[in-house]
Image 1 (cartoon, one colour):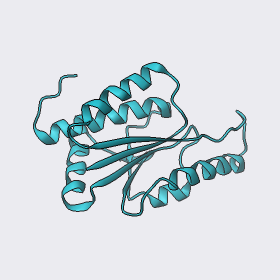
Image 2 (cartoon, rainbow, N blue to C red):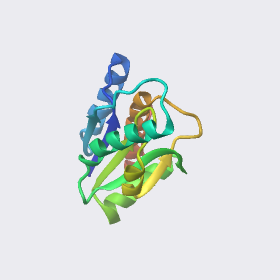
Image 3 (cartoon, rainbow, N blue to C red):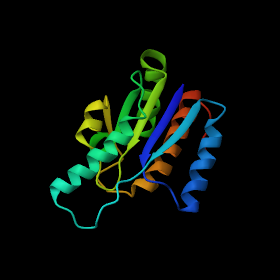
Image 4 (cartoon, one colour):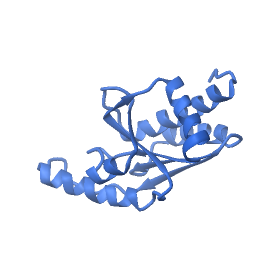
Length: 159
């Protein structure tokens, strides 16, 4: 199985980079894993709705350029379905067995995802109604993918 995370913006915080690297290393025996960072659009702090839409569209174009046609796309969105760790594990197992062996998770930038990206996604997943920084979300998602793999293999997860 091949799982990718496509995220907007470059991670700079060492603790996030180190945490993601640790879980990515732990995933190596089980599947191919890759994180793709696409550039965030430079924008002022205060923008109109039209300007926000332009920023999301430009970031969306960068995201879509990395998605292969056969990939099953899961977009992280506040209005997405809430999954438990066990439900995520079951979905990854189902996709690998009956769907596709290539799954792409999308994490938008600070303004969210463009309509084009959301239309490309077969599913939307939410980690709750709280807003989390998109950089931190990469670490949380990577850990949950690792946890899902361990659940699917019936192996203990302690860290």
